[in-house]
Length: 264
Image 1 (tube, rainbow, N blue to C red):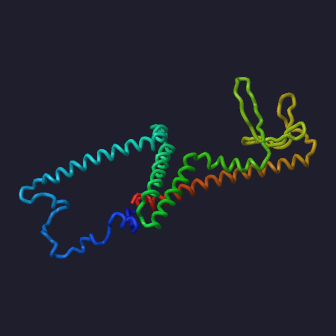
Image 2: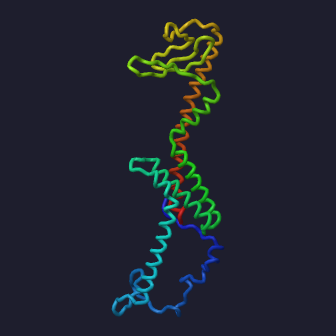
């Protein structure tokens, strides 16, 4: 997507005195002083000795002072705008650092566009809306684990709190296995791993063992619920991956369509 200009807001044009009366295409032949072949800005040189006029030199000097003051002003402004983002940057920060810079810059742009934008209202409104949508996507991408954690938490909220079997070893290590929920004096659930056991368990002589259930119908109900829980978790992870892919695709489209025109 190449750079393209956007129509100016007519109220803005009238406010700064910009109108078609100054269009060079409407100059008459009587207003032409001289014509020659050259490059851009060749007309500012004196044609007899190619020296820059003093007036032009003074104008350039005044402009350089003005530019330095302007840059100093924005250096101070940017310090306060960017100090939080800059403090968080590290050479090894990776995607989160880059995303943080993009978010700060776009938020700064949106604020400025709302106050000073001079495109036609339709274009200005679209620029602000697409920039805001981009920030929303970047905010989600800043914490990629949330794509899986948020749907996982929604699933967990619909089920009882499952617990895992904690095994401690003599060498000081420990492991956590499976999902279990209490039934009577025992636990119903399923171990994790490649060959898991499933059913009603009790601790016998300090070991977690499959046992006869005091209420097999209740055990079967709890196991069916656990199977549904695992299925919902898998679906939630798939949805999280899909949401992440959609955000990446949408972000790419937004940048392609608008990156050159947001600041126009």
